[in-house]
Length: 425
Image (cartoon, rainbow, N blue to C red):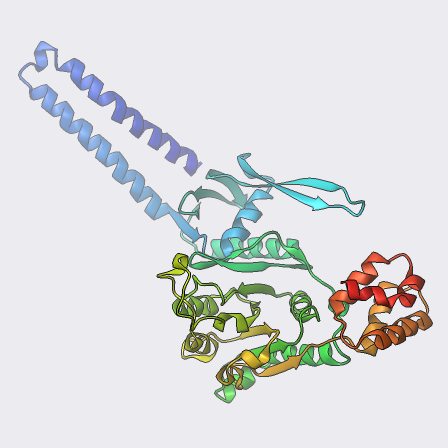
């Protein structure tokens, strides 16, 4: 009811603002107002009425209504938009977001997601009515309701968060830096099963135990005055499962992944520190190919397109990892194919607490991989495959094995007897 009264008041105000000048112009030709006294009186009255209605409307808003503004940089922004779009009582004013998904048959399925379009939307939460306004280009959502209790907004935000997290269950969110903030990159990805990544025997379990112990030991760190953060370095030849393991680990922990390319020529020390500190909660920060940040930086000949661009320095990376303003409760994973190119200062404890060599597949990994791709086959075929492949080469990555299995996924006997074809990948 109050929204209706406010709307009527705003309409009357705009109507008076439009017709009063015309009425005054008409009265100005009347002889009774020729002396100007009547015209002056009406002018003053109209001005007082306009200003009075505007002040009354503003006072009414301040005294009887509460407004919450959610900027796009806040994590609740996307939660609230998604929650509003799926409420049955929301006004029918949407923007469409078309998505494509590949089906098991190989065909492409088209889906349509509806999000609130810029403008005003009205809804109910219990016995309270809300007005939601999405503003462009500043990208903010403003929620307005009757009353002075801020608790109603907390309830709304909790409902929006629960709804969004339920929809993201078994999905992994990827974030990348855009401008001065983290933005979700692409659609949520289906979480990869942890057992689908086959590192050396016991290696996955060792890393899993270390990460979970860290996550549950915050008070232990506080009691001993140790910064609550943990750094991991996975090194080894390409294609052996470093990034795949991190992706699977994030899915198992229900964490998002924040990818930072420190080799980017547009990234400076200050921006790197800002992104490390402002990473979304419950996320893993991933620095891939960390050695690439220090290649060819000493060259006197520089690309003219990169002149004036800042670059990340070694000291900038060290400060971001364990400087004074480094964030707490943070997990950082770094990957590299060439650990010998990294400075010893980067590898010391406190910056890199756990180093793991992820190298070529051994015989046990080959057997596990075979049984994973051909679960109905007996153990003998897996052992034959492992034995033949070990005789053929000592350096085969899990990526090569996976590509070979995918090509012969319907013929495990052929795969076990023709391992020489793996060299093609």
